Amino acid sequence: MTHLNSFSPENFNDDIKIVEMRGLGRGRGFEVVDEYSAFSDEVLMSRIVERIHRIFEAVEGKRIDPLEAENSRLRDEVEELEDDIRALEDKLKIAETRLGEAEDSINEANDELLQQINELLGEKSGEGFDDLPSAVEALIADYCDALEELDDES
Image (cartoon, rainbow, N blue to C red; front, side):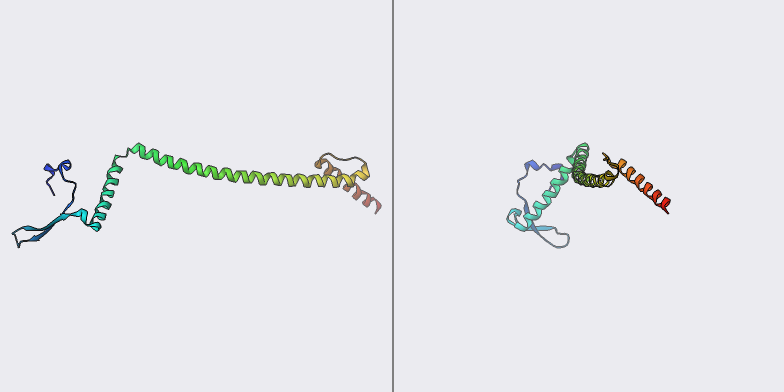
């Protein structure tokens, strides 16, 4: 213990002294019973080390520039956003693959349907169709003609 006016830590010994004192009675003061180094007490030293770490962290924290702290926070946010973007890109690749597979499946089904219509109408008209919409229109027209013939017969 020392008075603040005479406090100059560079002049102190690096040892931490433990002093045991005993009271001399009411109003008579104290006397030193034992004095030893704290470095010899492992339990006490671990508590001192822990406290020094907390003090050091507090001192270091006060030295951080507010802009540096904000930059660090923003860098963390950017990293999180980049992770989110990578996750979304992965999901987009999966969706594009599934869409491509679905388009292939639809195209195969359309080609099969066009082939069936061409076989059905090709026997009657002798011509084939290149695209599904015109083939479906011809099929509908042929169906309507067949319905009219049935109505005329009855």
